[in-house]
Structure formats: structure tokens, C-alpha cells
Image (cartoon, rainbow, N blue to C red; front, side, top):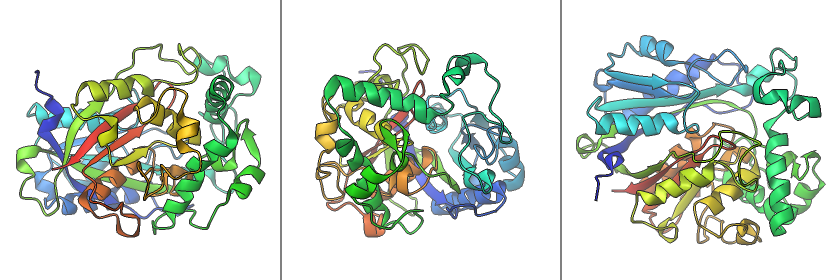
Length: 397
């Protein structure tokens, strides 16, 4: 069998800044907090870091979507790099980490610092969320993909994801009461996360009474913008054995896209590119979905987590609603604990990296009040929606 190169990589350090609503802190400041914490957590010094990776890199628009880029972090930390990458055209938010795994596997770097920072809450000021790509309170110019959505007032990914959810409801009989369990589970788990934004109890009645944002998605189906940064260190596995924490090995990655790279021209409008990324993950591993102990799945909108559950084979196509119904299966004590930090729906929109950070904490046994019982050994972290998706299968080595 051809060697699975990403297995030469391990995640050796974790770091996260303060997380909250409208912190008013400089986004580079938050980024450096997370980066320095990850380096220390790995038992390294800045002189040991020879790689740097981020998603999406420095971007002025939309405001708050990017907190820092490669040049700012390299300069602030005075890193001497052998390899680096950053950019928007990656397989989901975790694409930078996948790239880092391949870089250390190829010998281009020994220790790659990966980071993702956002300041979307402060960028909003006193207003609400703007349209995708909006600038300074104005609607974006109608070009590219949005040339076909803006005339129909489909300004936001909330509208686009809602169309997928509607199709899933129509094809498979999925209900709002079933979808609600993604949000309710996230809120219960957030109670054990001191950094989570929303920790107060949420009931099914609360959920069903909330304003609809884009049918069938309501307020509680949408993630919450925050300010915060997450960082981790990806190391060559043989260099990770003497670190201060248990090694989290990378068993497989998924980054494929085999359909059209489009929100609205996908061949099956009940799923997305995550279907292909998930298939690739299992093509690169002897493990099966039933072996997974923890699932940290992107929930920018609750339907995305449902779609990931199906794509990753935790249930059959169209069976996601039945799988999550009642919430028992996806509870922290259930057969597949889901989004144990509260996800982005209650924990805060840390945009992909938050799920990977939580998966590693769970495998290390460092989940604190939200730790999954039974010493989990295998976890999946996945991020992305629409035409972008990436995922990693992780193991406690």
C-alpha cells in the first residue's frame, strides 16, 4: 500500500486567545496570544518554528474575517522560516493545516505554526451581520457568483445553505425539530466551556420560537461572530515523541472536490463538497466511521453539521435527521459526541480551527468539564460548506 504521508505529522501544541463578543482588541494581538501559547504548549521556542501556515491570510474585506497574515506574524515573532503558506483558495479553513502536514512529511519544515484569527464581532460595531462580501455597510457589487444571487436578495450564506436544507427537508422528510438538536446539543456542551459565548440553557421551545432567518434556518441555526484566535503546531512525528503533552497523530486527511466548484451548481443539492472530502478521508484510512469517538463538525449553520454527519458515514444519505433526533446519539455521553466545545453556534465562530483545537484537547484528555468519557482515541475534525471542505482524522498516539 502506498504510504499515507500525512501520518508523518503530529499536532504537538495548542493555543487559543481570549474569545468573546466585541473585545475591542487588536486582531494581531489576539493572534500572537494564540501563537505564543501554542509554541509554549509544544515545548518549543520561537527559534524552533521553521514553518508558518494560515487561512485565509491578510484580507481587508469582509471586515473582521481575517485578523493577521503571514508577514505580520513572521515579523512580530521574528521567525526564520523554511516554508510558509496562506490563501483563500484552500480546501476549507483547515486547508492550511493539511498543507502543513504535507510540508513536514516532505521535510520542508520541522515545526509549522498554524493560525486563524477573526474579529468579526468588533468589526460589526453596534450593527448586525452584513452580507457576504459587504463593505462598510453597503451591499457588494453584483459580480461573479453573487451576480446571480443578489437580484433575488440572497445576500448571505444563510440564504444559500437554507436552500440546501430545504431540499434535504423535501427529499428526506427532515424536520426543524430534528435539526434543532444540533443547536441544543451545542448549547448544552457550551456550558462546560468557559470561553463559550452562549452558556445559558436553550430549550426546544426557545428554538422553535426564535425568528426565522432564512427558512428553515432560525436564529439559533446561525453561528455567532466573535473575536478570537486559535493556533496549533504541526510537527514531524518523530520530533514529537518527547513533547510535554500526548501526541495527536494525523491518520488521514480529506480535501477532494469532484463536483462543480459552485454553491448552486452542485450535482446533489442535499449535500456539498464535504461529500467528496469525507470520501477521500476514508479512502486513506483503515478506520471506519464506527471507530470514531468524537466528531467536531463545522456548524457555521446547523445544517452543515448534519450534512457532515451524512458525508462522513455516521449515518446514511438522507438519514441525518433521524440520527440526531432527540439528541441522545450526539450528546457528550452518546455514541458520537458532537461539537463538545459548543461548536460555533454557542461557542463562537472561530472558523474551522476551533473544531480542530477541540478535537486535540479531547484526545489529550484535556477537555475539562466537557471531556468525553472513556479516553477517546479517534476523532474527526471537519470544516467548510458549499464548494469548500476539508477534514482530518486524528488519533491519540
